[in-house]
Image 1 (cartoon, one colour):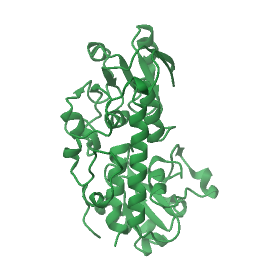
Image 2: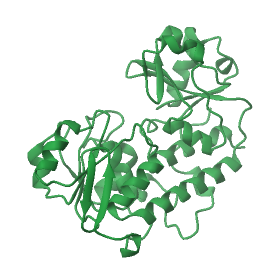
Image 3: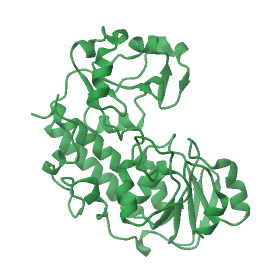
Image 4: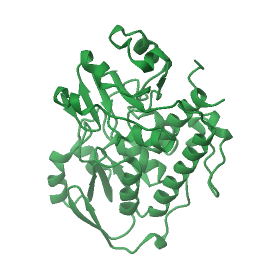
Length: 335
């Protein structure tokens, strides 16, 4: 197998017209780039009513001091060039840098001077007040959700907009956040840019025949198979792959379900039906461990050697990590 790449091969793809982003760079260079010019009054009328997961928010003007309590949404805020001043940080892990920023956007955030709102997703009311934000972006679900505190923040007149990344894909989230911040044009451009790059990459790929399964293999001790609606499945669909989910006959063995159906390790072979397999947060080393698992030895994809990594940044998909998924896969399917 070819070595695990960084942002390099996508430099061969044609850039979308008028776009400043150059994919033949490192993520550090991406920090200095933006997708589109700043939003203007043409982006809509203000004041504006924002319908969100925890009610309705009225904003008099595009916010100029935005704070994110959700690292899972921070990448989208950065890609939209929203004036983000601080973000909550996740617990340090291989997915983050030393500050707790997800690696796909950490360099961009540091370059723009984004501060740590509070570490380890440990909600800090005082830290939030100190930022004097004119918009607080929050998540409706996940470990970074602050829903138990939203009503109190709203009662104090703090402008909070809550979005659900578990129910909406990253492009829809970008559209919603774009409207809340006056960056609709950036959201449209970003979605078109990503689709154009995925289409160009797909044209260079020779895909194996049949369907594909995305597998969470020993991910935080869990095992699961992606549904065709997951964020990762949507990226693969844009690249021309057909993602298949867990068979209905195994539905009664599912222990937990959302975008992925989680099952026991021993039931994993029956849950994987794709002719090819893609590993969530996978690296070449993870592929080797998967291929060496005796429980999975009889899977057709294993026997055919059609198991591929999605890359170590593929857990939470946003514009930046979506690009790295494409970049990760290209060497495996390009001549």
